[in-house]
Image (cartoon, rainbow, N blue to C red; front, side, top):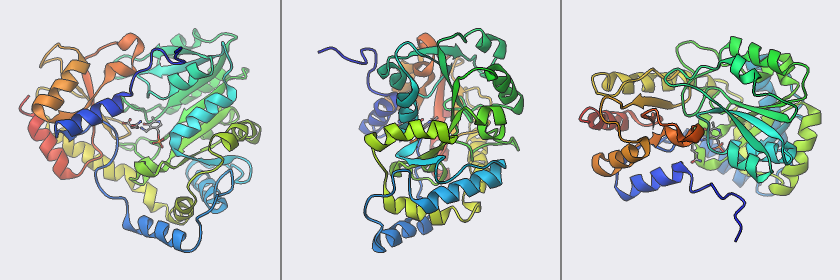
Length: 378
Ligand code: PMP
Ligand code: GLN
């Protein structure tokens, strides 16, 4: 048969998590916490089920949750979105991203992404007949040269996708980056998809620069968020997106037919949980301590690193250890040394191999210590 995605295999997250399971390795590959979500939040879900929130939610999402989201955006970013027309609750950030791309990308449209890039963008673009245009960022700092970006724009450019804090590099966009992007897009009708799933995980007193804080960006943007990252429950698959009404109308034309709505009792619970801002404001401190613990434990190893600025991934450079390719090395570490990670080449243009691996530090201190013990022997 004729595949619609001839170059797509199984995602690296499935490959590495399965390999870790098979070889009983510590799994620092796929990004998910190995500790519990807050019991209070779990109890709120049970309460919601017991009090009858077991049928379809409204298509755009449970209203109280949409209101809680708009209040959060107002408090954090001093910007207003209307809960009735500018917010949609989704089945994780993944469904929001897939739906945004499906709603806007036509055959021959070009979508610009920054590599290394999270792996769900390109297949969605391809399925809609679009063309992915890549800007490759250079290890170890992964900074954007905006003069290079401007040369990639032409009359077919329909969308730009950014991700800050960035997965997998752990870098964040500065205010200057956002202003340069805003200036570049001015006067065009290019849509911005701003993947901000790690908005609450940012270190060393850096401040998250949401696209919604920049008026000319906000007017053309979908902001995508994920509760799984923020509340340690990636398996619940809940997130949301926000955008000005005219864009959201197009989004919901697709959303209503690819899921209609998402898990109702969990939306009710999240609406109540979001009333206390400390539930997300404490997250950066929580993860910075884990990053610092992990890095202090491996500082004398043969891995080199630049500390992650955000998200819960640390890139480690293994070029002092071996020059074998990163996919082979990641597999060998899993099978022989019982520690799984993600090779970065799978996210790069032409699988560029910089001899770096991504380790997820959303793990208990005990797991991080066990991981460091292994890495120190390699
Ligand atoms: N974007 C990025 C950058 C991510 O890291 C992830 C989760 N790995 C997603 C989107 C998808 O989030 P969700 O699990 O909420 O679908
Ligand atoms: N976002 C997670 C990561 O980057 C993985 C999600 C998935 O398995 N698709 O590791």
